[in-house]
Image 1 (cartoon, rainbow, N blue to C red):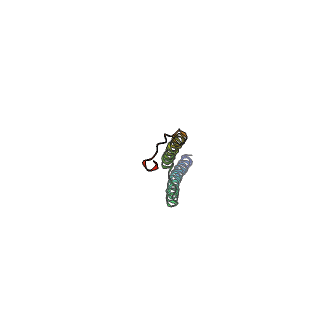
Image 2 (spheres, rainbow, N blue to C red):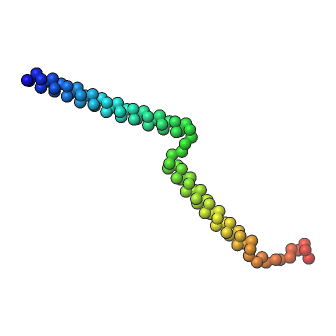
Image 3 (tube, rainbow, N blue to C red):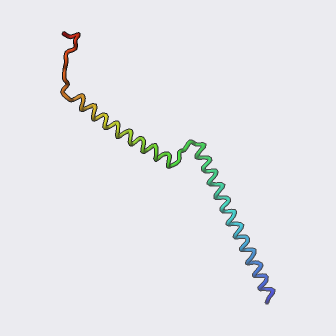
Length: 90
């Protein structure tokens, strides 16, 4: 009976060791895939999300300023202009 318990204990230890090895292998494979994907995206000139958000905010600000300047220009063009005669026109 004690021999049988010892065999089961040994089998349990082997199974635990195998699961530990598989867990380590899984983590290593995930790290390799993550590194490869990051390298592929870098090579393809993809930008990171935070870089994209910064440029998006800059573009929105530039667009807003451009719209304000368009409105200001339209107001100046439609305003009654003071027409002065140039000295050469007299």
